[in-house]
Length: 187
Image (cartoon, rainbow, N blue to C red; front, top):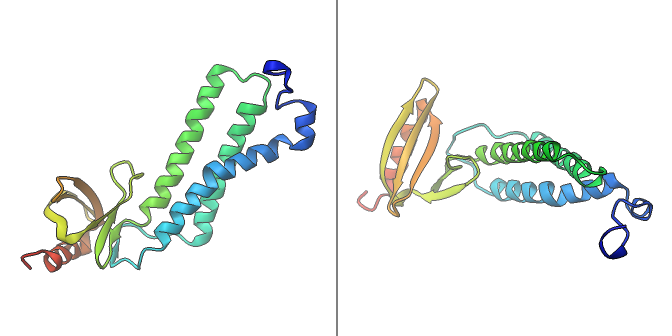
């Protein structure tokens, strides 16, 4: 019995009404599948990029990624809520591992859409979790931070004082400067 004499969620009655895996999967869908699908849908509505920072994945690969994160969340919920009394250390470890899997999955989704678009550019921020769309006309300065044979990392200063980072393929990074010149107030 739970607090106040009410039956605890793990009792036989609760198991009959909703098996633990069904309940865990339902929570996982609400916590992982819905938000990640929403982010993916918003990002897929972007126009075709002029220059993508990274290659976009096929739809089935994104679905597989969202499914894997959902399974990880469901396993954690099942373990954390439906075991008799999980040890504090194992519960903390489960939270950490599930959190890392969730964040890594979200970063993999968002980073696919970084790049230059006709009217703006999109960055994923330093953490990869903060997608930011910025207009070329608000760019104040561009500084090259790292240039390798394959990739160039630039820091873009905006008129609002914000500093954004964007990785572009080195052989076509010049397209950023062309877009800024095209949309600058003086150009």
